[in-house]
Length: 196
Image 1 (cartoon, rainbow, N blue to C red):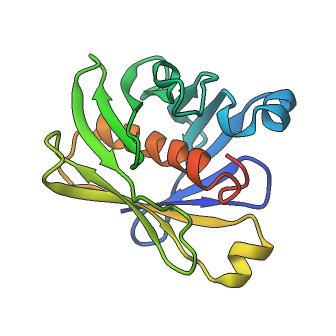
Image 2: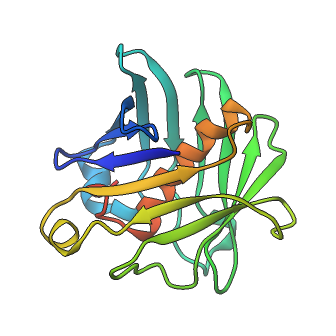
């Protein structure tokens, strides 16, 4: 289990393990123009560093369309780990009712699916995106947006996400799952991690 915590400082995040210990620190890089005018579809690079300050993961997202009317321009991002070496990709899949994504390895081969709920508003409850085998029949984990209470959700820009995947999952795919968490936040909870 990893937790991704947005802070009130713009575009900075902590990634903690299941014991609550910070293992990574993430910073989003993009232009002010992108953030203000293209907010939910903006391009960005997120640099994820370990506690010693060494960059270990880079998440790169090009400017893409956020409309189901243009299925050839759906969301996609590349995850590098270590930076400069492709670990895999997160690709949005067109679906008329559910948010769906495919996790691909460095060779662009499909590895896992992510299927979200019909409604992602998450009022007063957690919202789970299930991580599934390619046939979408077997659930092996989840990415969750945790409900943190009325005061936190309404009056602050902080939010908590959790990633649960099997311990023996390839470490490169685990890095891609972190990228998927950032993409899910951007698409469905725009301001929950301070507008990532």
